Length: 258
Ligand SMILES: [Zn+2]
Ligand SMILES: [Zn+2]
Image 1 (spheres, rainbow, N blue to C red):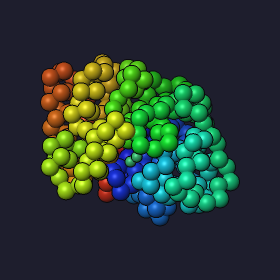
Image 2 (cartoon, helix red, strand yellow):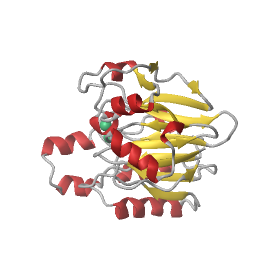
Image 3 (cartoon, rainbow, N blue to C red):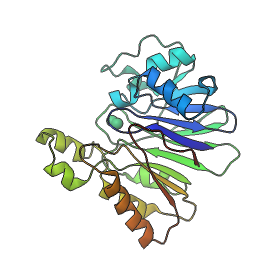
């Protein structure tokens, strides 16, 4: 199994997961055209995409969902509360498959484990994804205010983690946002800071962990160099040879072997 982050950040998120036979997308927070362009850029034929999974109803994750599933004629996997959220209009969806957070299910060669995390939306989902016959396990962990006990439990054995490293605390506090928005971001229902991401890795780091991909970096309240330097420091302290990548708003990452 391998993964490529097509786009990551508050202007739109989409992640491509390639299994041994088929490909799936997690989130469609860009326009359909942008997503198809990015698939093209990374050499993936759109007909190989067999499903779209949605984490939550924020615009930067769901904006292109309706057009993408109609264009590619694929099922939309979403949980009930998110599907019913009223802040957006998906349009007509032929094939909606409701999942329940906490209940694992299979799709093609994938085992998907959805679980809830605290965020200011109706029921945000993070996914653990593996393939039936391989040891690689991927966790996609973005848009959460703090790592719960459940999150730490889920992080015990993945080989690859896509981890939110949204903001540098000082840049956020001293930055241009209005105070209510600063409070929202740093609240228990907001986003993980660089420091929180580092503390979490320090706590759950294990020998099988191969890749950390920092994601959902704020363009206003963070710098890739700051997020990277802080994580490198932790990895050095723990004498880890784990690969570190930084996902980006505008360009897809390379393919990362889970
Ligand atoms: Zn988001
Ligand atoms: Zn969100």
